[in-house]
Each structure stands twice: as structure tokens, then as C-alpha cells.
Image (cartoon, rainbow, N blue to C red):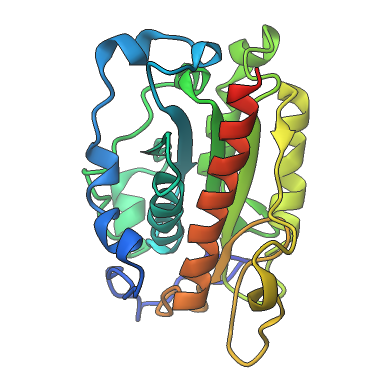
Length: 258
């Protein structure tokens, strides 16, 4: 299974390296954000009880096979963490493929610094969520779909209703689903009663940049992975950081007016 549009994984793929960044916020966040510990009392409190006693929590829940989505997730966490009173929490969804298959697909090992989300029930602790995933034929990867499929009990009791959520994606080609991957994922939010928060054109002139290859759309940040050897550009990472900051500001406003 490829990175998007059914492309076959390239044998030229090298383990993902951290993309360079001129942003001081991004430089501080990549390895630090996932390890931030939430006090036990705050972790036990429902998201609806957000107040002066704790920061508003924006969960960034993602699946990344080759590291492209993870690069966006880390940069989104940097943007969200830059908003006063907001805590960015990075979590990856469980892998569904066996190790021998991942080895044949030349997928690098997952970074243990970013923990796997314990269960879908953990989403109740979030004041808002950004979901990141690669595309498979214009829709989300099976690993992320399996995670959404595990939220049945939350759906039954509408525990996530009213929570704001957004998406960022990775595709292999320009026609591989930068918009449709997010578009088809909206159905998951609708059934939960969650509030989809797109970025629109809030990134300004950079949304109209056509001189260089750039992923992303009004639906959310994105990256073009190509055959797997291409890593996110600074513009793509900056859009992810913008989305994290923009989403954090929306979540903060809603939490304080709940």
C-alpha cells in the first residue's frame, strides 16, 4: 500500500529525518511536546471542567507510516503550544500491520517518545482534536479508520459531541487526495456530533503560492510524499504550525465560553 493514490512504496525510502525549520517554536517542540506530563488531578478532570486550574488540551492524534504525517503533527504541536493557556498532546494511533509486513514495506520504526493513545476513551479528556493521517485511494489510511471504528461506545453516548476537530494529511501525488482525504473523513465527525474546523485561507498569501510544490488546502495542512523520499518543505511545515496555532485559538475560545 502506498502513501497515496495507490502508489507502491519506493525502495529508495530512507528513514525520515527532522525537517529543518527557522521557527524557534518548532525547534523547541519536536521532542519535548510528547513528553509533557499532565498532573494526575488535571488528567482525571473532564474536558468540560476547563478553567483557571489547567490548560486547555488540544490532542493531536495521528498515524504515520513513513514519517511525513508525524513531521506535520510535531509542527502543529509547536504552533498549538505557542498559544497561551493551551497544552498540545501528541498521540499516535495503534499500528494494525504486523512487523514483518512493515519491514517489507520499508517502514521505519516508530519513535517511542510519542506514546500510542491508550484507548479511544482518552479523547474525552481533550477540548479539541487534530487528526492526521496519510491517504489511501483518496481516503484515510486503514489504521486511522480502525481507530475511529473503536469509538463506538463514545458515539453511543455522544461523548464527543460539540468538540472541535480538524484534519491534516499526506498524499503521494497532486491528485492523490489533499482535499478528498479530509472531505471523506468528515463523516466520522458528523456521526459523533463534532465540529469540523477547517483553516480556510487564514494562511494568507502562502495559500496561493505556486512557485514551489506545496501540500495543504482550505481543509487543513498537507504534504506531498512523492515516492516517499521527499520530506515536508518549510512551507508545508509552516502551514501545519499555523493550523496548530489556529486550531488552538478556536478550542481555547470555545472552552472558555462553555
